[in-house]
Length: 79
Image 1 (tube, rainbow, N blue to C red):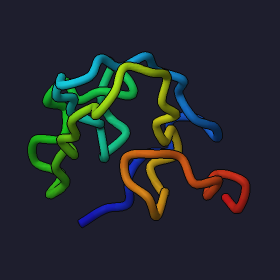
Image 2: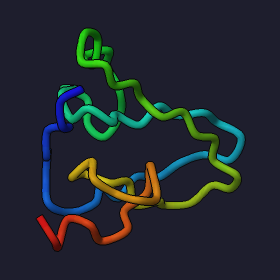
Image 3: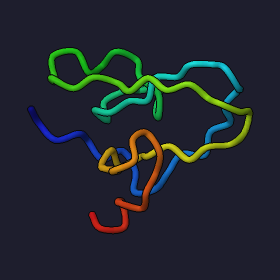
Image 4: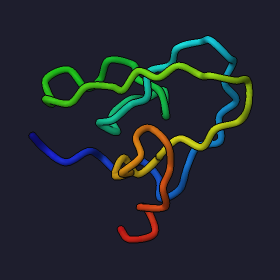
């Protein structure tokens, strides 16, 4: 399996709605960052589904190297 594409070295600030499911792009190839558009097909990588527990702004990883998927943990500062 190849490494994910680093889309940006920083998080995406995204408003989410409580109870709604989202699919975070883990491969970095989606044209709908930070969400999956199906571009991962054939990469061996799959998106990560998560459900918002409350309505708020979350910070989703843009470098795809976080240890706290799908959320930014500052890993981009080491790339």
